[in-house]
Image 1 (cartoon, rainbow, N blue to C red):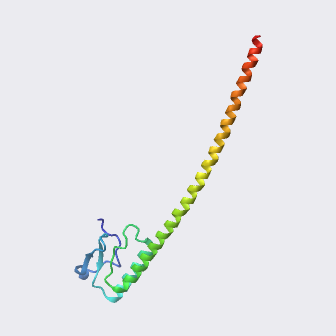
Image 2 (cartoon, rainbow, N blue to C red; image 1 turned 30 degrees about the vertical axis):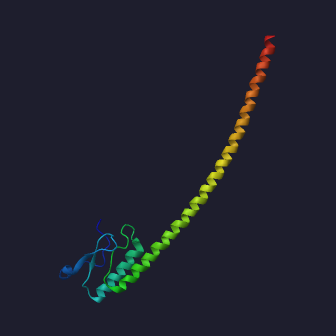
Image 3 (cartoon, helix red, strand yellow; image 1 turned 180 degrees about the vertical axis):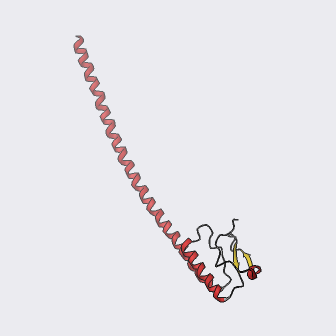
Amino acid sequence: MAQCKLFWGPKAPDEFEKAQKWVSYANHSWCKAILAFSVAVALTQIGAIALTLSTQGAKEHTLCCICHYQSASAPIKSGSATIKSGSATIKSGSATIKSVSATIKSASTTIKSGSATIKSVSATIKSVPATIKSVSGTLNM
């Protein structure tokens, strides 16, 4: 799988490099989580997570980042709720497309009745050449 592009907070200082760890979530892409930060930096990271969820909506990488601070789980859960309500909107949009399809079918009926009118006009044209033939016979006499 592709590497997750959602990173949390600023790059860790060198002394915290060893504390970084790759984690996975429900077979989604991998993401980097910084495990050994102070509480102040952790709160900054939580704000970054909330901002990322609200602006990007996890389009390419479905909420695959796990923060190891429990207070970060609330923004992740609320982001999940937003994605679910978006799914509901797509379903109601599908209903609108179906009703438009019904309108197209009724328009098709109108075209068929128009076709019947064209056929009856064609019959009138055929009777006109018959009249010309009888005139031709009269001229030969």
